Length: 292
Image 1 (cartoon, helix red, strand yellow):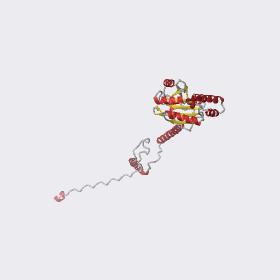
Image 2 (cartoon, helix red, strand yellow; image 1 turned 90 degrees about the horizontal axis):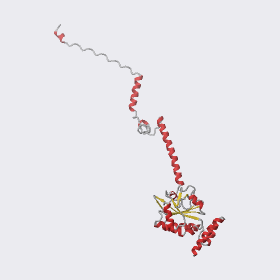
Image 3 (cartoon, helix red, strand yellow; image 1 turned 135 degrees about the vertical axis):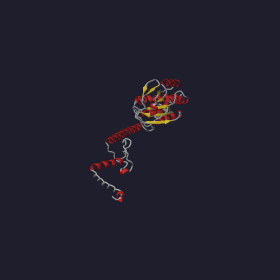
Image 4 (tube, one colour; image 1 turned 90 degrees about the vertical axis):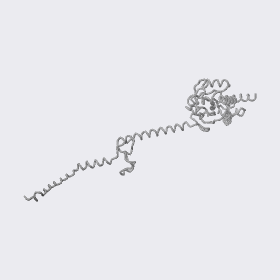
């Protein structure tokens, strides 16, 4: 063989034909689409903390207020609605209670039964405003004072003492009212020779009900209510002011210490002989003391 033919390179082997691609099956295609969908799903969230289930506003055309239809979420929504309904009823009851216990004002009226809860006289007898009004001839005067035997309270109590007869001429009953103990009030009453009882209200329930509680202290004032529960006066003020308020009420009721006062008191009695006699006698005694 010639040398030229021996030196010629052998031809490269032919490349194998490319393998044919397998046709994509419907099942494989569906699996691939599911995987792609999961990649675009929002992260899992707690419906109680994220009512929008992790979907940002405007994402995928879904509104931020998209309706939640999961059973668990629906139960939470129902429970929340029930709680709000119960709280709403409680709020309505509280509002009604507050209006029912609104501070009484002159010209208004109160429901005497249960008003101010139970109190105690300086002699230790349990009572209520309703009982005091029932036992009175025409109504009750309550003058409030901060503390027994202090200068201002002593002046106030003595002013009511000195004007006691004309102030009670039309059938009003006078009581001092404070948070003092029965012992303190008894000492106060005895020392100042007060002709009327002193009421002890350590919890300030009645004092608060008539509008004279100020923080932990008592506001000086006077409260007058008649037999029907009508508020004839409710006013705060100094010792003399409280007495003058009651004098004004008595004058409007037709009372004074003279003969005309006796006649008007009898007319107010409305034919009740016992009331007329007692009231007239009290006014007559007052007139004699003044003349003397």
